[in-house]
Image (cartoon, rainbow, N blue to C red; front, side, top):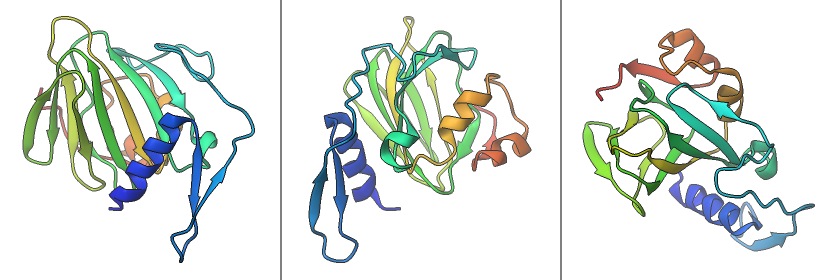
Length: 180
């Protein structure tokens, strides 16, 4: 797991800049993106409406925006619920709670987070989440590298899908049902 690259990519994307690091020297070079894309609160980078049944998703940074290094969504819980316990063998998943209270399980540990708090789901570690506040919860979720997550959210709309073969198509593994 390379957390430095994950955190670098998340910081760079949120600032609207792209940084590339030389492979061996660690030297840094700024690259000006071809276009600046401002995406408002609750808005989708591509102007789409997306849902998984219990939530609303707005793409903030698309996979193509970072050459596949990062994918960020704004996730609003409309109803209680969440994905099954799952893992990503090739990417980290970072959660930042903006509103409400959200319960997480990462590995064997369970925590409940509020606004301004975050948790990292390292690659290969089972995790899931569920909004536990009476009002909808809202968070940013970042995936690094982007992997197949953008494609997953574009193609899958059933929040209760448990078929391991479907999850494997998007480079994820279902470990079990949500404990929430």
